[in-house]
Length: 153
Figure 1 (cartoon, helix red, strand yellow):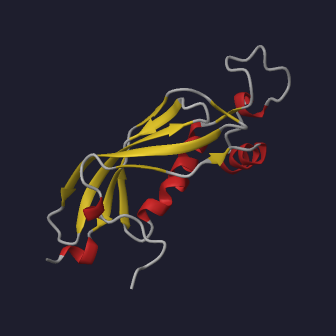
Figure 2 (tube, helix red, strand yellow; figure 1 turned 90 degrees about the vertical axis):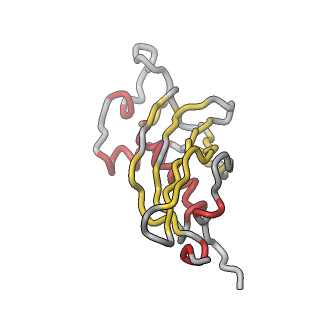
Figure 3 (cartoon, rainbow, N blue to C red; figure 1 turned 60 degrees about the vertical axis):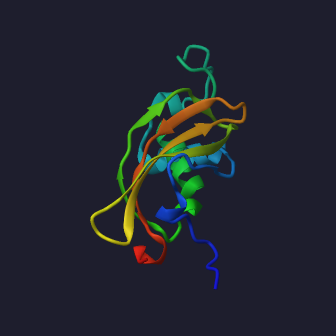
């Protein structure tokens, strides 16, 4: 029987595999909630007065929020098959603003079996794009993934 809502297995992700998430718009409520939960009470994120004197005009959102949303957007790709998040490097390329709609494009850049059967390591290059196609954030997570049928032949 086919299991619904199951992500990719290690075996489904050979080197070069590419996929794209659905999109999500960042709202003012998202920004306010994230700031309050994370205590990122920086003027850059909380001052709604005249922004012309700010380094970045407009209602900018923290890169940490963009990263958190990116992880949420790609969660379906590893639902029930992801075993561990092991490492990542992250770069913020451009600001993201309230009202921006983001999606994530992923490419498998490393894949190898582990010494323990039934699992393997997969590293992807995840690039977050806004509605204009501009890359705003990229990161390269290394994850441990379950093999199909537990890696048995």
